[in-house]
View 1: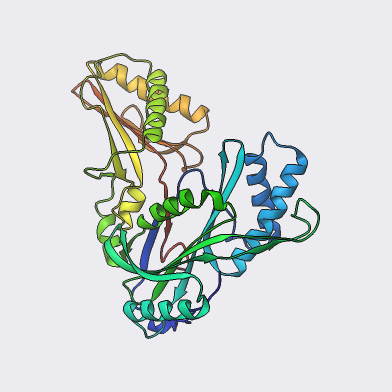
View 2: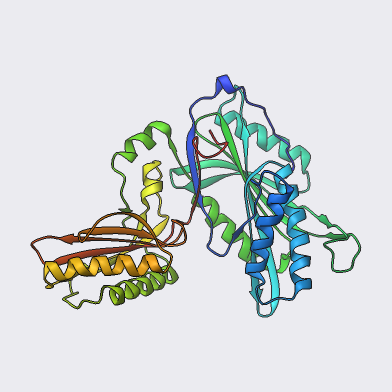
Length: 373
């Protein structure tokens, strides 16, 4: 990223930290721009490449590793707080794009002034590009942002090039500069793609990502944490693919429970804000939940079923978050980063209430866990 409006901030002059979050599509793979050193980059990137190209040749894996090692190093050097890429199959043709997010600290300047300065600086630096101030719908309502659309060619090193020689590649780029309302930070979202034939697809996808931006003050986060539980968001439909995964996990839960009762009440799938995001004051949708229940089974049988499910899922690698033997249990897949299953026995009513929650899709940065604060 070209830093044309960088302003260093005085730590003593910061005006209110914000928890900031946005949602990336599930087919984006995060690059290790937060790694401590090159060895960690290599280790994490190597694992990622082997996962993505599990069926590919060793030469393909080496080429991909070299390319994204170079990209990761460049993004980390530019100060990216987050970076991710996607690989798409367009009827046999490979297509790719990268999204990066940067933070700029503002010193003794308001969000409105930062917006104006960014616009002027970008117009001077990129006279041939499309630079304009646009209204940005986001999780906190409409805000103003500077948008730059233009070219950003880059050179692939000889090690990463398929020809064995340095190769200059044309690349389209969109940058969105968003001053945050605390008058202390500006976020920069950046899309880059060499697959110009898919420009319309990626620009629309990028707009969707930026519109998910949400934030909360420390005070809002503290207030929200007192009411922390997954919250349904009215009038928002969950992604159909996510719903199918929820149904598949619910089917596994039912099989593990090994009981049969009435299931004609309380069955609903809804878009929700997960517990962690809600506790940070973020309110836009980040996941989905399948809520259902089993009725008409004796409490003693349901208590045994709860224990049976806990044992079965833990045997499959699920992590137990909390629970009371024979009464309730909360489990998470993939080391607390995957699906969650919560269930509670309603004693005296012959009822077992279950909810299956999909993984949160939001990338969250806040005062506690990143340099945003």
